[in-house]
Length: 201
Image (tube, rainbow, N blue to C red; front, side, top):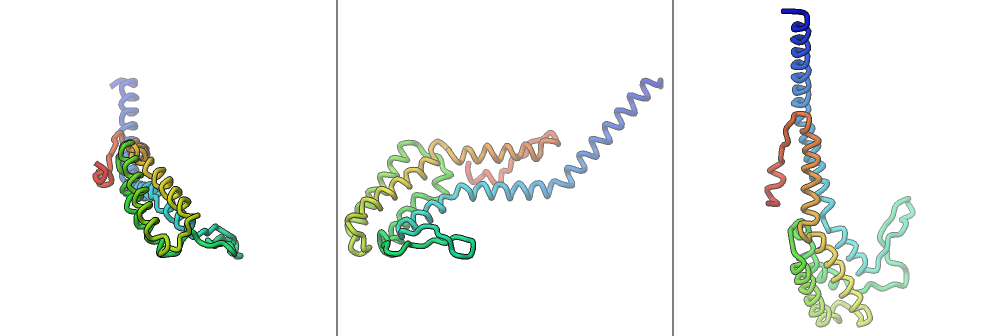
C-alpha cells in the first residue's frame, strides 16, 4: 500500500470512528432529548387552552380587576362601590354554556366558517333565552343584559376562530415537527411522535 493509499485509509477510519462516537453520544442523550421534547409538547398544548379566556370572562362578570395586593403581587378585586353584572348563580350558569363550546377540544379541532357561525349563533341564542328568563334570578339588571350577552358571544366567536381550518392545530403540528427535526436531525433520521399525534388524526 502506497503512502497516499495509507493516508486515505487512515482518514476513512478516523471518519468512521468520529461518526460512531457521534452516534453513541446521541444515543446516550436520546432519553433526555425525548423527555425534553415531551415537556415542550405539553407546554405548547397547554398554551392552546382557552381556559384563561374563560377565567377572564368570570372576572369580567364579577367586575373584578387586577390590583396590587400590598405584597408586591396582584390579586383580583372589585373596586368599592361597583356591583357585579350578575350574582354567582348567574356567573356559574353562563360559564357552563360557554365552556360547552369554548374548550381545548374545540380549539384544537378543524372547523369551517359555517361551523364558527353556527356555534356562535347557538351560544348567542342560548344566552338570550337564559338571560331573558332568569334575569331576576341572576340579579341581572336590564342595563347590563346586552353587555353580558355581546361580550360573551364575541369572546366565543374569537375563540372558535382559533380552530378555523386547523388554525392552532396546524400551527402546533408545524412547531412540534420542527422540534423533532432539530432533535433527531444529526442522526439523519426524522422521528414522528405517533403517540402524541394519534389523538389529532
